[in-house]
Structure formats: C-alpha cells, structure tokens
Length: 550
Ligand code: NA7
Image (cartoon, rainbow, N blue to C red; front, side, top):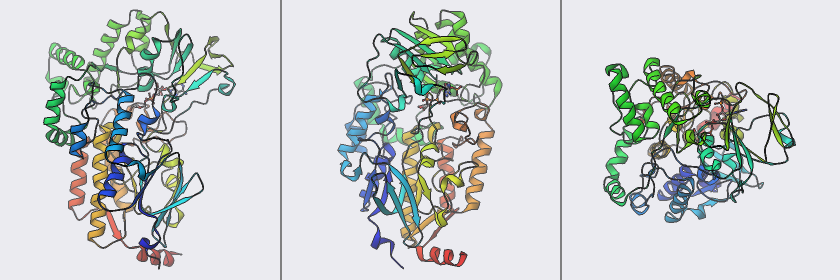
C-alpha cells in the first residue's frame, strides 16, 4: 500500500484564485500544509478579474464585501465608495494576494481539465491543460458560482462581422465604444449596470429585453473617513452579526421582522419609501414575508412599478420595464445607478424581444421580427451557467470512476453545499446546497472555508485519511434544501438559481434559501452530533472495500 503522503506533490490543490481560492491558500499554508493553487486567468480576483465591463460594481456594500478572517486586512484596506466598482474590488484582491504573499502558490494561465481520485494512493490527480498533473490529498474547488458564461444560440451569430462581448469575458483593454451603435442583449444585473455606463459613450444603444427585472437604486456615494473609521472600529462585531443575518451583512433599520399585513397601506408606503431611499437589494426585506407571501410581494412590486413610471418619461417604455412574469426576489434583484433614467436619453431604445423575438443575426444587424437593427457591437449580457457550470466542465471522477457530472445529471446537490458521496476529500466551496449567491459571497466563502478546516482537523484528530458524506445524509440535506426553497416564492421564477436560463439544464433550486444564520445553525448542529452525515476512514479500508466490491 502506498502512503498518500509519500506520493503527493502537495497536501492540497486549490482550483481558482478568486476570493475563496485566496482564503484557502492562506489557510492551508498557515496550518503548515503544502498547497498548489491553479488559476485559468493571469491574475487573482476570479469574478472581478474577468468582469471588467463598464459599470461593473458590487451589489453588497463594500465594507461587508471583504474578508473578516484576518484582522490586519480589514484595518489596512480602505474602501472609497459605499458600493465598490469592479476595478476597486480587483485591486482589493491584488492587495490580499500581495499582503498575504500568495502569488507564489498559484500557477496562473493554467486550466484544470480533470480531477480523478486514485483509490490506491488516496490522492486526487488533477490534470492541467498544459499536459501536466498535480497530486494532492485534498482537492478544493474554489471555482466560483458565476464563472461559466451562458451564450445564446442565435442563428447567424457566427456571421456577425462587428465585435461581440460578454461582460464576464470583457477585454482587459476596454474596447472603444464611442460613436458606435451597440446592442445589449440581456437585462440581468450585468446588463443593468452596463446600460447607463455605455449609454453615455455610444451613438445609439439598443437594449434587447426578454424579461424586465426589478431594479433598486444603490444610492451609492463616497464613504466618508468618519464612517469608515467607525466600521473599522466595530469590525469584529460587524462580522459576527453578519453571520447571524439572512443575507450576510448587518441589517439597516428599514428592515422589519413583521409581515406587510401588520401595517396600514400608508405605513407600508412610508416604509418602502424609506427602504428605497436607503438603497440596495435589501429593499426586498422591507417586510419579512416579501419572498414568501404573494400579497406582500405584490405590495412591494407595485411600489417599484410606481417608481419606474415616475422615472421613465415615455409611459409605453415604462410599462415594458415593469416585470409581470415573476415575483420580486424570484430573480436576483438588481441594484443600479441610473438604469431607468437611461431610457429617457434620446440615444437609448428599449426593444421588447419577448413580444417580437430575435430571428437571427446577420453580418451587421440583429433581425427582430421583420426589423433589421444595424449595429457595430453586440454585448451578450446573457448570464452564466450558474453554480454547477464550471464544476461540470471539469472531468471530476471519484471512487470507482464515478463522474460528478453524472451524479448531478438529475439535479446537483452537495452535503452542506460542500461535499458529495463517492468524492472523498473533495470540497466544493459555495456549492449547490449552500447559501452562496443568496448571501454576501464573502460570508458564504469564509464559513465554507472554515468548515473545510474543521473537517480536516477532525480527520487528523481521528487519525483518518479521508472524509466524505453518506448518501443518506446527502439525500436528507437535499430534501431540506428543497423544502426551504418550496416554502418561498423563489421557485416560481425562471431564474438561474433554478438553472432555468440554460437550455436543457435540470430545473432544481440549487442554493440553500433559509439564510446564512439558519445555515450556520444547521452546520453547527450536525457537526456537534459527532459530525453527523460524514464518514471518516483510511485509504486502505477503502481500497479493500473496493477490491471486495469488484
Ligand atoms: P442574468 O441575471 O442571468 O441575466 C441574463 C439576462 O440575459 C436576462 O435578462 C435573460 O433574460 C437574458 N437572456 C439570457 N439568455 C437570453 C437569450 N437567449 N435571448 C435573450 N435574452 C437572454 O445574468 P447577469 O450576468 O446579468 O447577472 C448574473 C449575476 O452576476 C447577478 O445576479 C449578480 O449576482 C452578478 P431572462 O430573464 O432569462 O428572460
């Protein structure tokens, strides 16, 4: 029997150098373990490395969209705006990598193609696109929830002779759009951020909308030094509180824990007005039943419709911008600066492609119904194959060669969002079955990274070599995740949370919708019951079981 430690190149391999990857690399090294990071891009930052489109900005407040695990990081870094721009967040990623001296641990410009568990050595053999392999005892997928683009299959798209961009693959040398005729297809968060930024530059902007979305104002502004100093002074408590909330950041006073029905119509309006003035997607938590009670949801949705009518001067355009096909919060609410206002500009036209669909793309135009719209540039703000897309793109094989993508073909689920049976020592940070995208991603990431190291400490404590969840634990977790989602209105929208945006993808609500505080409680309860749902063993016993099974 070969010992795992004799043949491993590293104790761990971490796939991805976004924020999860950076936290993991630091944490492995801090524990005296050897680790290799692998990253497809030639820099750190993940989402913020790739998303360099005009207007890119976070929809969680900057002071909360940052690491809490290292006291020096949060004291040394100073955010300049309430909601940070993409470039500022990217600079923050670089600051973290430099400050913690992580770059030397990462192989950049290298894509992971496969990860295969060797049952004899108990090692993960990770295949890279340069033809080499890395062997490690632990393999952690820190590949991000929104990293594989969803590109529409529109007839003739290959014939277009102008430029086509996706926000998540925006050229690092930003293209000149001045004076151009530009079409944006897609009105999710990316499209909604792009539109006002691009409208200022271009000759003509066509916004091709299949479904309108609910958009709430960021009410962004500079962060004043006194505000920042107060946040820094209270950071430990702020981080602790963030884990005790649903969304992973402290709640403003505009949020009540009462249903809409406990207020008169005038009080409801007053509260919604205050939430609108406060800004951000937390508007959807103004009453505690907005995402569970259709009546409450309608009150808030009607309020937004009124705002849209008040901002957009052309009543016909305003009507088209008002969502009617999904409840507020059913799709990820968008946070903007100037989206609705952009439709008052003479060079911006809303094109309703639900009413009149795109027929095809020609060498220089998009054909919508009978109309040919001449354009120089097409921006495909059509989203991502979320949560599972990147994991399924890697050939991940566990015990007996079982493929993760086959295990997930009828619906993806990981125990606590982190581990799947038959895939020992493989971890999926913010994987399906965890709060991930429904929560501040930094809180989701930090909680999951801690969970990894809690499991590794237990492994060591037990003198075991491999940890994996049981099939029963996975199934019961999957039922819990589905039950929580079914108790909300979130399952009624054709959202990427459900995989509904990708043709052929199984329709299944992937994130844990009970909120971060509840998820933390669930995890702690299971771990306190002698690590309920996990099995700890050694490689030899697995190999013997496998030999017997054959
Ligand atoms: P989203 O939120 O998935 O939005 C994609 C948009 O593209 C949405 O309006 C879609 O309309 C539209 N879309 C997708 N496919 C097509 C086709 N084939 N034709 C026309 N329109 C299409 O992606 P984003 O990048 O904006 O945001 C993703 C997340 O990134 C965001 O929530 C933040 O967390 C950051 P649909 O609604 O499906 O009718």
